[in-house]
Image 1 (cartoon, rainbow, N blue to C red):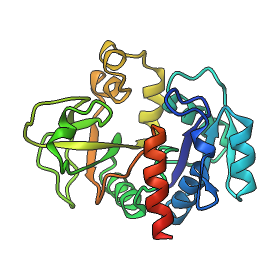
Image 2 (cartoon, rainbow, N blue to C red; image 1 turned 120 degrees about the horizontal axis):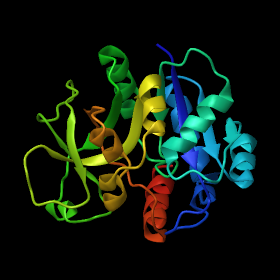
Image 3 (tube, helix red, strand yellow; image 1 turned 90 degrees about the vertical axis):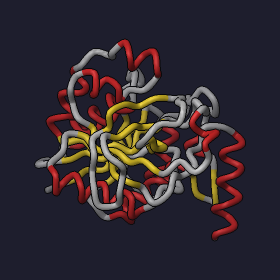
Length: 243
């Protein structure tokens, strides 16, 4: 089974414009993610972006990048264009890594890929344990409810994804990493955005609304995503301290 890792990235994030090129330990955030993806060693790695500055940075650091359209509504549309432009043949799975999570655990990427290849699932994603109940109400932390309790060695279906919740059983912190079978990705990008997806600003709901299952793998940790200046400074401090 062959996996291709694609990392969508763009400069025009609403809350923190230019974040892919912010530096930690002298390396841009997007190149940190590329480095993690290469270290996971599950397949070729490509950054998909509409911005030439990101292409220059990524290639300058020895990684691969493809220029895509600036008309895409979602990261999934962007990775689909990059898959086509890559001309890489015989791909079975496409792993979509977020370009703003340089602290992602390499083992979590590997485990998700293993579960996808062993179970031949449509779409797989990651989720971590919610350690603080106040995160249930934090709309910036997306939650997933699974059919069964999430364990290291199982891969239950996700029943629902939501932004805020009262405490309920089998609710976890969703980590926005996706692994698609090639067929599922091609089907997904042909579908119109669903009402649910638009209202909740969660594109994974488009899959559930169209009866495409999403299985969930337990992550060791919930990495800090860089959405705001505070996130960046907090993560920079942690990663520079570790270094």
